[in-house]
Image (cartoon, rainbow, N blue to C red; front, top):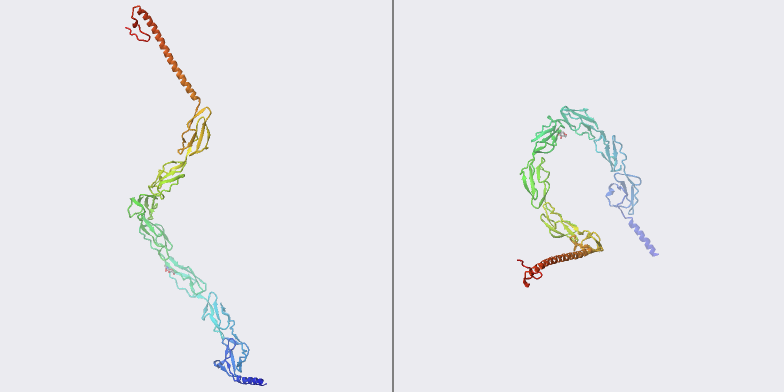
Length: 509
Ligand SMILES: *[C@@H]1O[C@H](CO)[C@@H](O)[C@H](O)[C@H]1NC(C)=O
């Protein structure tokens, strides 16, 4: 009971204390602030009333603007503030209004004039202020061009005090005068003529005076605007510049008079070459000069050159190139000593044929000044032996034709023939059969020989027998004669020993 009483007392005391509390500075809604001098205060006593007001550019949209401080706290702020709109700014004749930022407080509108019109007076920009659009809208006025000045030696039409937008004015010049600029101009939207008004000018180009040149066609003096004239240089001179010139509006020749310069060809500078007769510098038109290459080099191009009218050597300077023979590429051959690529002038190289091939040509070659091998690359040809042609013989085995190196054939004589030589032959590296083809001889050959010999022997024997018989007969005859002589002598009493014996010579006295 006593506790409840104490609590009641305590809360009562608290109530008495808060009744004395102030309010702190009140916070309003969006776009509003405290009105008047209240804005300077920080603390507000109990029971005080303050008012809010909308910010500049904002207007009140209902709700009470007043709040009250009660026991240290403010009543609710009911005021509503809304941004002010300036609305439509109206219309501009010959122009239009843009609202790029809208038309609320602070926004800026832009006035633009239609083509052929320009803004008069004020700025094209107007701002939406507290009291609506600030200031009057600018105006758009039609564009005009001021009158044109007189033209010396010319005229234009129409002649007016003022020209409308886009109005065209035409110009013309008196005889002998040329219009410098556009024939017709017009009044632009900026109030000026475009292009700029032309002038009338007297055009005359001086007769060209070009040293060492001659007139080659075209205009004769006086040279008026656009007249063209062509020049050429005299012999031995070359032209620098354009030969045909046009008389420009500025009374000058365009693109500019050429010059005629003495033709001179530069002294040739050919690497690895030497002067070999002809002109010495300076080389004029038609001068000729001859060059030769130094040893080991060969010339590409013409050795004799002529200085052309253009200051260039004709037909064009030659070059001297180091002689180089191509590395020989001989089928079925192998390098066998000498030079290795690159092969310079005088280099020698030797080749040999691979097995089974024979060389046709020289095995050692020399690189000539013309870059060719001398006396000319050899060839390696496959060794081939001719078909053996042996009479009265038949093949008895071995290789088939064609007969290359190392081919073997065996022959046999036909019946009744005997072989003389080797029956097996080998095709040699020289393309010949080795050891040499045999022959087949007839068996009767020997018989005939034997018979011949026998016949000869018989013949000789017969001759000898004949001779003996003949000799014996002669002897018998003489002995018979001697016998008769003896018979006669014995009658003349010859000694016995004086009578000659058989075969003994008797000296007859
Ligand atoms: C021609 O007109 C141009 C531009 O207006 C000017 O620069 C030039 O000097 C004029 N030429 C002559 C020959 O008057």
